[in-house]
Length: 321
Image 1 (cartoon, rainbow, N blue to C red):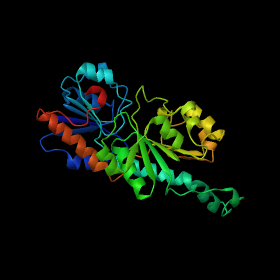
Image 2: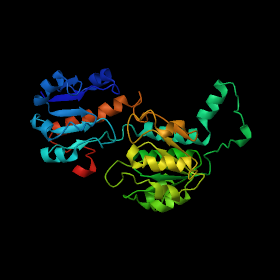
Image 3: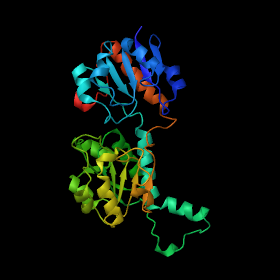
Image 4: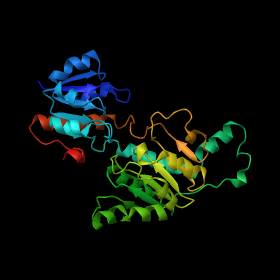
C-alpha cells in the first residue's frame, strides 16, 4: 500500500486531511524530525507538508522510496531545490489552493492602509474618537486608483478581479506575459516594472522568492514610486529590501505599506516597522484560512494519486520542470 507521510503543523487541520485521504493509501502524520517521522520515512512514497531546509541530500538518502515532495504552500523558498534535483524528486506547490485567501488579504491590506484602519480603531478604544488632530488625517478610496501588480500568477489574477470590482485601474508586470485576450478578460494591461512603480497608486507584490526577485524592491525602486503611493506585500519578505523600505517610509518617499511578510520571521522586537503609523502588519497569515484546508489537502492527495498511477504531477515548481 502506498504511504503518504505528512508533516504535522499547527497550520494544518489534520482531521480534515484524514477525512479526505485517498482510500488505498496509508496516511501517517507526524511532526518533522520526530521519532515517528523518522521511522516512517524509509517506507514513504510521498512527502506532504511545508518546505524545510533540513530536507537536503542526506534526507533524501534516507527516503529511498520517495517519489514526490508535495507542498501545502504556494511559496517554496525554504526548499533545497538542488537536493531535490539530485535525488530526482519532483517538488510541487499547492496549485493555488490559497489564492483566494491571499488575494483577499492583499485587498484587505490595501483598504487598511488607505483608510488608516488601525489608527481609527486605536482612536476609538483610547477615547480620542477621531484622534487629536482629525483634520490632518487623509483617508482614501480604492475607486479610480491605479493598482500595479508585480506578478500575475494565480494570486495576481484573483487580485486583479477583486480590484476591478472596486473600480480600480489595474496594470501588471510579469516575466511571463499573458495574451491580449486574457488581458482583456482580466481588464489588465502589461507595463514594464519601472512604469508600474512610477505610475501606480498601490503596488502589490505577487512573485515567488528566487535569486532574481530577492530585493527587487530596493531603494532605487522605491524612489521611483509616488510619494502618495502604498506598497503591499503578501508574497515573501526578502522580495523587498526591508532596510530600504524602512528608510523610505521614515523619509516620506512613499506614503505607507501593508506587509504580511518580513525579512526575518518572526521579526525581532526592535524592528522599526513596529513603531510606524503608516504601516499595517500581519503575521504571514494571508494564506492559511479554515476554508482552504480541504483544497490544499485535495490538491496534495490528487498529486500523490497521479504519481502512483505513473503520471506526471501537477504544479511542479519552475526550477524543476
